[in-house]
Length: 628
Image (tube, rainbow, N blue to C red; front, side, top):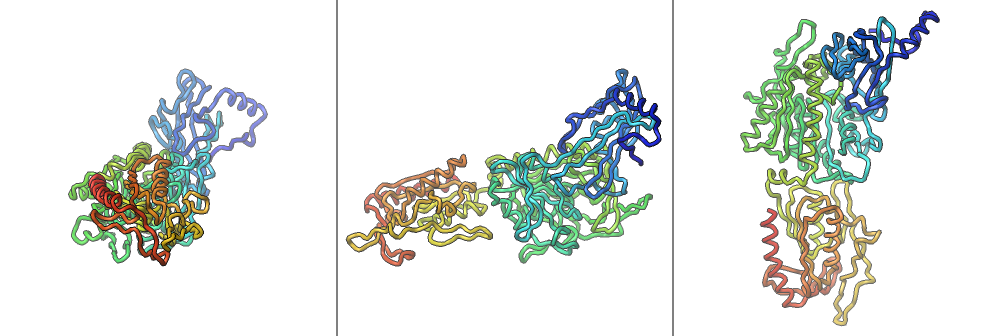
């Protein structure tokens, strides 16, 4: 298909050029939004200034990041006022027929057969040229930019550590809900979905797992530890609103997403688009566990009359004997699922896989899932207005295969699914996770005292599964020595030994040796308890001479308030000392301190301390009953 140049055609006489200019001045192509729009945003196309019932061809063209050109055309007839509205008037023929408001975009076809539209630079829009043509002459033309990233969205390449991909950050301080976006096999790194979702207020990691930078070009196995690193990195990113993330997956990455949700913590919601409920292609390893791939029968591949291969039935039913070990045990997962399945998926039997996944959850007493099916849609359900890709090279098969789908139905499915995806994640990531917690069941409680208090706060902040934490005369900072968790290091609170008091009886009073956590040099030591999703009970003795427990508890409570949280209680005990223990435990006002290396004063008046122990013991049990 030859696309007409925007300039005057060579060979036109002066008279012809004047006539063309006169005709062009009457006809206008109107786009709304004009000039620039987001790739997932619809455009209203209108032509005005035509003659009554004039037949014209509307033609669109774009070139993707690989230099592959895509084109579409449709014939329209103007109304009695010389106007054409694509959202009201039908195409009479061409790349599509009938009323398709975005047909010039969604029906674009590659001039290089079996190519899928791609873009490798989210900062650079794709441009679409649209022309109105009559009798070989261009009557009107416009160019529209289809953008991926909103102003203020940042793209950060992931180059440290072992994970590869990119991170898209919405503008502002956040925190924002977070998504892990994984591509299909052969997709290497795909960023279109990630960039568009960042526009909607999500931190999105577009993760590559093969064929990108130094990742393996050919896979014979996958290690779940790689994805564990990605999930951990994302969950604890400073702009991410925890405690958990969502996963968006398609095709092969669907079974990876199910495995992540089944074996790794920190996932609240998973969308799998035309994925499988069993491990496919190659073995999946996690520590000492190996999940084998589903069995295949290449004899079930068929060759169509056009010479293309249909592999829908090559992967055998996961429920048959011999395939049981390949099925992902999603009943272990504590998240919500959205299974999207195309009924004309020719890559594999997505409808069967989604049915089996849903039934497996039901068989284990779970209803934490939704299933949506799309009649006449094909395998690659993508973002809205992405041109339908009915055939493509399959890296596992080594040849071009049929992917299925009818263009209009497929396009409508993409629009519907894109609406469902952010709604689904909004329900399960943007709330207080009360429904998630109810389904998950209670986590554990932590009871801590003194130094173990800051350890308990760190566990609640960085580890999943904690529902309630009691800190008795603890600190809101790491103390004594550094605390390490993977790539995170929290330094200890600074000490000023000049503030130690030598009493007349020769004992040390070290209450003020640990410096105020709010001073600049100590801020890195503060535990980020605002990340935690549990409830806290801070118990502080007012005569604690080991350190300033009252100050630490007040600062912890304020830290939670500053982040809009009221998930805590504070109880203070006048005249009580450091070691608040079980009821009727004898008061210990002095003791050898292992960090100091000598005997120190611990504080407290015996009667008040004893009464505090009785009261606190009662409170602890009531607190854990409420939250566990």
